[in-house]
Length: 472
Image (cartoon, rainbow, N blue to C red):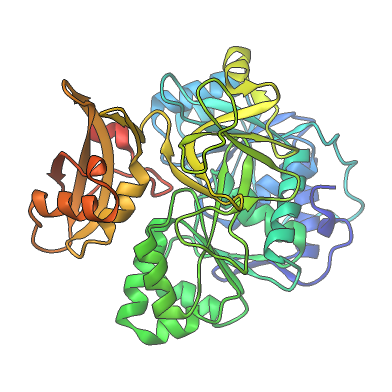
């Protein structure tokens, strides 16, 4: 069962958004009410604002056996039109008063009201291979693809995370992640609900609010590197915040690599070592650093039941521990395929292994060190394969660099040259100084040949730098 805590619910708090709270018993009754209003719909869109009603709408749809299509409230017209045409949801779930774009407003609407409750037994659990979510993820070209995520993958992956992180009903999670991505919605909402500890969502990230929760009932924080960068700065400025955050049992970072410099800052300011994990929409979470070995610069070892390998361009596992290759994944955490895209599904698979497009080095003990995306972060320069991520981490160790992204661009001599896009921490350091800094820490062929200064880096909703915008 995907959410066993709803079968025999208790009066323990399940979901909190500010002053709005539902216990597990109230959530079960309210979810039954939502499920009863679906009219047998098999696919429903959810207007995924950071709210209690989004959580309830998603849980109610899952209880009712429908597949959920989460929709980003900031979505553009063209992308929304594509998602609706591709997934063909029969209904849209939203909070009363939410003003929806015209294409969504044209669907049958269910207003999600936590006050509406229906007691009794839950509906029969759908088959484990039935899709629970259709989450749209952007590729390198073309419109977003709908990832069919089965209930089986979610249950298996959340249990693997529980084993890796000793996650139990005694844990309360706090976060401020968006609820239209797998990080915030599946790991960050369904995870606590499956394991019984509950979730407190802040609506928006705020260091003081995070610290207050961790000084109270919350034991775990999920965040992305941008959040931890801000949290480190705020804890350095106010040691009382650092003391509160230091009471957490677990700080987890994902969705992008957390720079080593921010690892060190968080540890110094709070006494806590951040756990990094690695996952994708198609696979959920694949690896995590171990609680006893939270090694900065890596995303750890495979979770229980998940197989990971690093291969060359022919698909052969790499024997050289220092060689960069593509990560491939196999296990019960895998998606069913891309909706309406058998061609893309076939291209993403190799003999049962999912080809992630992420490049990494696998250390001798099995820990993975991700160096970037194959399409944007693997730079082939002067006969060398260079991972953008390790250059970014090296540059972030320079006191004059606040933020950085590294890309490659065509070069007549080298094939590609390394380009650093830098947000300075105060006065802009000379480009030659930054190049020498990288050459000293890594090796001369990895130094940036070009340094371009920006006031800020372009980022998406999850805080990831959109490197294609830089190249454009």
